[in-house]
Image 1 (cartoon, rainbow, N blue to C red):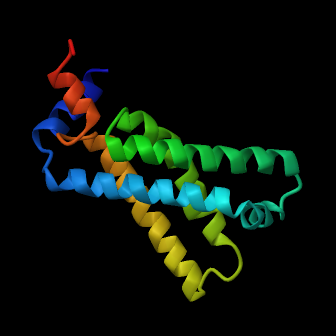
Image 2 (image 1 turned 135 degrees about the horizontal axis):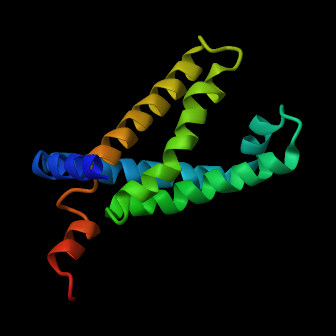
Length: 147
């Protein structure tokens, strides 16, 4: 636990302010992807139709949509950012290593999706280390503990 505290202290002292705007944009992008999942569930289920466990796929589709909607809002606001990111990382790991590894991996559209998924995964890991920053609800709550 002492190591986590040291990493958190280092991240707080070395946190540039411009990275908070990247966190806000990342949260809004994840929220947008959650809205896309909900608006086009047929495409999401068609993507998962290749597996044999239909009910598991339906549950995973709901988990992805809910995690993106709630997690995107929390990341953008900077409220329990690290906790919200922990729910996003497994989704992005699956997106990077399993979904994009299907046949046709070298097609242009798949490379674009792979690149975006990889960038989002790297940003999530970065904000897992750095935390929410000064322009966040978490920082405001630390500054005003009795309000």
